[in-house]
Image (cartoon, rainbow, N blue to C red):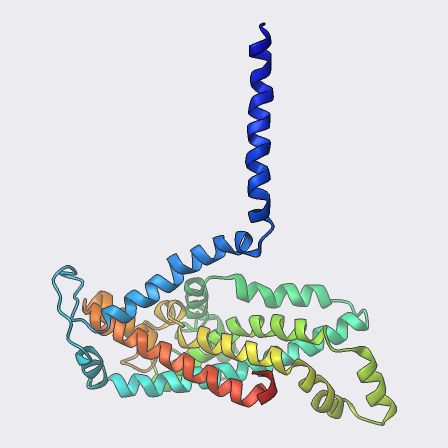
Length: 316
């Protein structure tokens, strides 16, 4: 082997070292590490959002998506003037409000119970967390199917079976409009409580123990410690939790689709489900995008309201 051949690996190593030396200042900058996340958000988040806003000002149809015109606010007017729109808006408000309240209350109770169990080294704390988290990792479609099986309106439905065995009559969980809405709220609360528990439990871990000790010395009871120590300390976490579960609940679609399909009638048809039907059943992409934009505005307004309620002026 000649001397020139032996020097080839050395030259390649020198070239590679020179390239790495020039790239080192770039690698040490924050933009290098956040650039992949920025590209992901731009491609899969921001672009679809802007495209949906653009489509909301058109009469685009799924039957002929390339042949459309810009019609201004006509799609919004058609959605608002729909005979069933305000009924669905009322159902959505009831569904979101009750679900969010139940999720935050039940999530707080579970978080406090688990936090107490962990601090006192009680048996079953880990299994309780696993059981609660199992509801969170199950897809919404599967949750809807499971609840539909449990609420079957015959003697063979799991819930109705135990009701009949206890001397009650079969309950129309899915065919009665009011019961169907309550069943949908119960299923969504069962799924979303786990997320609230995770968030609030994480917030409880940040509360300094000496604050509780000082409150006990001052004679504060458990409820007073919760009100004057725990809540002020975890207020930012409660704010984030409320924003996220409100967005998730308002956008709930898959679980309702598999549980009730929006029925009976329009009793459980929320705006997210209406948007799906408008786009993929009636093929009106423009009106479906208009509903999506309206839901985005509702999310923004609710976030601002939460900020005013939970974040102090000096924290803005």
